[in-house]
Image (cartoon, rainbow, N blue to C red; front, side):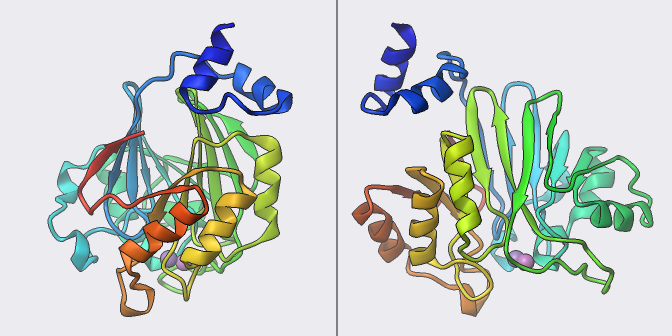
Length: 257
Ligand code: NI
Ligand code: MN
């Protein structure tokens, strides 16, 4: 059966029947998706049809000094929470790109006060956009906006688009809430914070990858400040020992998912 062959090709031949039922919902003709890292927790997910930008904090990040934000295009900007290292370039890029911003209602209200009207508030729900399905999920963290405005609660996202299921955890500590995702999804990639101190560290992220049952992890939220500096080699080894792959694209690098 074609679906089983597709699963085997992806190294999933030994999964249980439940997982195969989930996989059956996906197209066997998986398209290529591009991931471009902009430093900290900012990245662009790109398919043939759509550009999704996440947590833009670029112009104030010395590690991202080679990124020219005036060249960034986006159809949607997804915001995990209101902290400065996630919304630093949000207003400028929302205006530049005319993208629709998907964020907590409080973040959307804050944007409206700055003449960004093209918003889609979400609050831990699920919605089908023109590019695919987005679920806003729990993150254990805080979420105040840079000017002291109340930012609502912090969040992560699970995206279903182009036959792939991708989890972006936002800023979060390790939480058992993540186990729910292994019941709802068969994730292809988990984009997890790994820098520690403000979020999970590498060891926590390995546990989180187990909780969400995902073998391919892309690390974010590390090295930007001294307290979140990591040893990349040690981090990659830690995931390897757990039979998982940690991808750490360089700032400005594009990888294919
Ligand atoms: Ni934060
Ligand atoms: Mn942060």
